Each structure stands twice: as C-alpha cells, then as structure tokens.
Length: 103
Image (cartoon, rainbow, N blue to C red; front, side, top):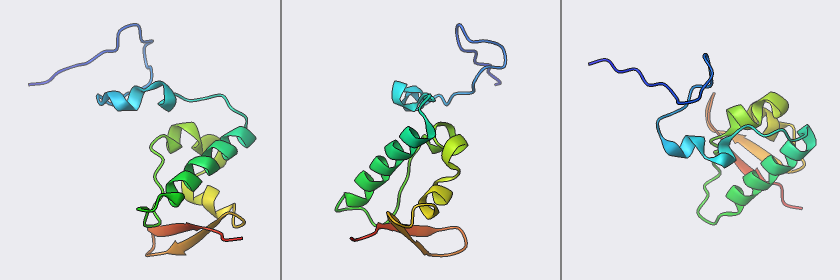
C-alpha cells in the first residue's frame, strides 16, 4: 500500500516534517536570532549537556541542522571554533568526545 500525506494549510513545496510530533514542537522551529545570540544559546545547551554527571563526552542537539548550522556551521565546526570553552578528543575519523575547558 502506498500512502500520501499532506499537511493542512501548507504551501506547495513546503517544509518536510517527520511524523514524530516531537520534531514539530515550537522550540524546534527555526528562530531568527542573531549569530551571536545563536552562539550563546548553543554554548548554553552544550555546557548544560556536558555538566550532566551522566554525560560521557557526547553532545547532541537535535535541531542543530535547521536551527544553528546556517550561522554556526556544523556542531563540530562550532565546537572547534571555541577552544576557549571546549576540548575535542578524536575517537576515530568521524567520532569525537567533548569536554569543557577547565579554567
């Protein structure tokens, strides 16, 4: 069986959305913050994750590609641009862990 799903009140060629409702929460919508404000928001979220006692050096921001990437680059590029805040330790060609720089 083939099914077609259309969003009500969507424009033709509109944004693709996952069926999972958590992908379309208001917090996940693209914001119009300045690059500086986006960098601050990203830094706060990354720091929050790394300060979690159960964190093993992994950072994941589900909305990175549509919320931050245009202004800040990939998550890794952003992390590497802030050696004053984050230390990146390569695990292999693609994987790495992140830690906070201790002052």
